[in-house]
Image (tube, rainbow, N blue to C red; front, side):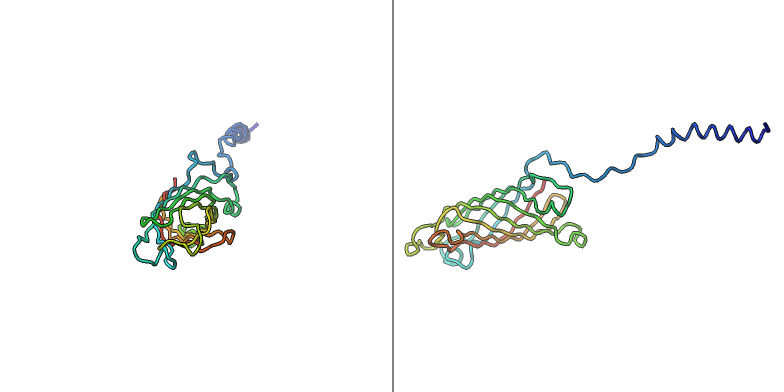
Length: 208
């Protein structure tokens, strides 16, 4: 066996012994995408803000009362987390909230669900979003006969009622966001009177 051949053979044997070890040392392939873990806190977001009481109604245009509302709400974590962003958009966040009218007109508390949809996420870097809410609302407004409605109040017919709301928001940071809001409450014709309330305002939110 010549010296060059012997050197080549030793090299091949050494490589064969080293290769399995080197292959074992290679980083494993990236794991497949999985849905994010449910957050430890059951609270997803807290929001506070204000609104103007129904500007086109007795509660918003008649003099002698404050038209300002102070409101807040808590949005809880989604009960189901999906790996597919498309289907995840259909899963709402359970929501509770309330609004206090500083002029002694109709105040209320509500319970329902909030859906959030990002608007052109690639263009706005996931900062702009739309919210939609649907649920029920209980209030302390007037529910009696229309011809006996007190000055400065709407004839709401009954309580509880339905509440629909929408918001256009912008995420300032990972945690803070601001929103322009509109909400409408009515009994959908289930009671004798159905003047309802439509309020306009804004909120600031903190996401956990």
